[in-house]
Length: 458
Image 1 (spheres, rainbow, N blue to C red):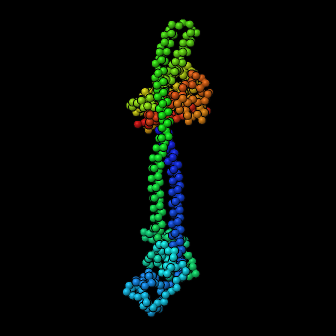
Image 2 (image 1 turned 30 degrees about the vertical axis):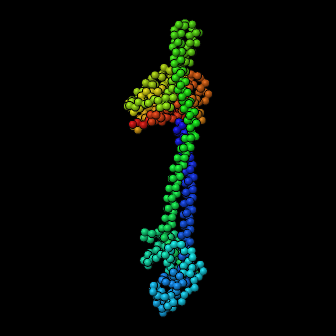
Image 3 (image 1 turned 120 degrees about the vertical axis):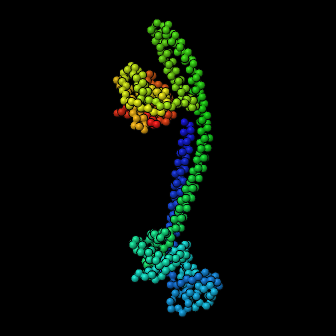
């Protein structure tokens, strides 16, 4: 029981921390995703400005430029008398180039590139007749066939921004109308997707490591916290076991002496007192036996002996043995038992479970009431139910009905003959769980109280 309690504490901590970590991880991933998306949109906007606002220039790579500039910008006048490719010659001098440099507009660096550019981007400017009048490539390139395919997909989408599939790559695009024409910019989403994916993987790995760490810490703390409780629980179990053993022998002697006295007493009044003594001593003996059984269960002292058992026969015999008791209380036992149901279980243990449930049902049935014992199998599971009428168990008592020494409301315990000690159902619950089954209870005014046992038919 304490082990289950410790596991519940650990599980509660893990659930709380897990939910918190998931919330934080989702928040971080959303933030990174939005940041990457904003970065991508800014890149497209810069490219649109670049293609629509920058002068109509050609940018050539210059080798050995004395000014230290990586790029030189020149007018792209097709009538220029100088060789347009001369600046790309690594042996050429910048002083021999006769083309007129162009003034760079604001927000563009000395190399004629936008200051805010942060990645590969491609842009084109289209006039009103659909002709490409200018194209700009920043760390990227696109041949005419790819460009035509991309423009067709954008046109067919009818959107001003979005994502298109081009080959194996996803391209984000933005389309804006400017005073010079329609500007369209493209950039790959690979970097954005990779950033988000890496953030997600990192978050998952970090969460896993933190959860493992929290689990180890929680187990350690829970174990330390439960140590005093475990010691008290062990002391209580030892006390119950020792007290039960110590009381068992004197009670046996008392019952034996009481039987001897009964044989020598003829007076009815004296015999009545002796019978009362015997009755109370037998009740106490039963209590001690039940306490010893639970003590052995806690210590793992009793073992189940599994074998193929005709559980239908056990049920029939149990109901038959309780008929005299039921008759004395004016209660009828009805059975609905499927014949020849065989399962792999412990016969003596299940005989005890049947006895506890039937005895409990008979005790709490009203006079002229009926106890219904059902047993059936669907091939996979065996279901046993024992029901009785009378006062239903209070709803707030149902979760505690299988706890040790727990009794329902006073209306069910006023009669000492029916009250019991609150251990029978706890024993039944313990046995059923050890045999791999489950036991439950439902109680209402319409159907009465129904105890149900479910076993796997293996």
